[in-house]
Image (cartoon, rainbow, N blue to C red; front, side, top):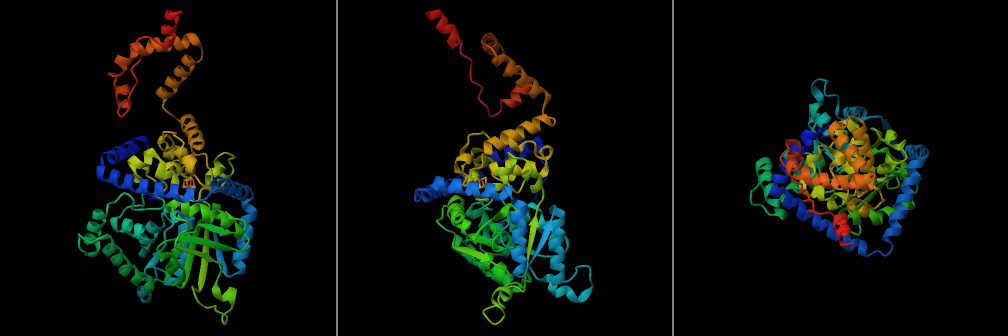
Length: 481
Ligand code: SF4
């Protein structure tokens, strides 16, 4: 899916279809409620939760303010330990770098004959939002390569030919029955298979892919400037296999993923699993620090793991976001997904209606900044501004404030003239007692008419317009005295 444009009509159509899908709404509601409750219990166990959030916010804000310094520090320390670092200005460049690295290992797809066997080998992928953002699978498939998602939810989505619909739980919108039917169709299993049987089937198929893979691609949860290390978190063990079995490991990260010190993980490891899945800690945490041969020496436990480790640092609009004092805070995001689980809009329309790899409140903030506000105009408006996202965000991003700022930009860059006129008139009416009184009188006259006029009719779909009182409070008050 990547980051693409989306106009108001497309968003309205997709949201309408999602609202009519009771099965999807049921699946998303059940799963998000469960994760939200688990998160609540996990947070309760800590008496310094707000203190942790503030520390995380401060660390992220400090790192972003000095990002150039920490990036250079990370690169120098990673390279000392045998990692090759690449810089990608945009999505195309990032995809090209990765594809060229794969060509080096598997052979150029344009080269004739003898590289066929290598080309048939899978490229195993661990869950990574940034590779979704740059549209990597699409490009690799176009070059005749076979990327295989190895996170169970991502694999389900790949079998279904759909992008993920949640940052942490990619197949959150599917029921177990739908997944069993999908497996039956795609891998020939029994359509009545249980959850355990489905997991065993996935495990059996993916084990073989791991064994055959020449290249493994992962994301990065946090990169540490002090040591040149990076951390990946998971529950399934697939990331360990992706990053250790193939001969080449390519880690792809947004440039905002940095933390200054290894000890900063103490804060983020308590925040991220609790916020994401309600766990105290994920099942596996892997800190990758260069090549084992380089770090330990060939004879001293080295020589295991991949022969080459590459890190691709992706900008893709992040430098522009960084230059804006208010919007910079959106780069503090640690992709925990907590804001999606409490968002009343996301819970009803699901992830795909946003038309972007980043759905929910953080998607409505990030997508217009990366793709351009004109390209994602409806997204900042896809919020009730209730503030639940701000309350749960572990790094204290003021998402409603950012949404309002993006709405302002969307209006300035070609918003609806009628809407502008309407709000201008409303502001004038509210700006003085007699004008306010006049607006109340007018609302009584306009109300029955408004319900019949076609522009208001459309606006009124799904909205309840309060019936104006026969006498306003002021009028009643005057009569009493
Ligand atoms: S904005 Fe906050 S709550 Fe939402 S995904 Fe990012 S870190 Fe999590």
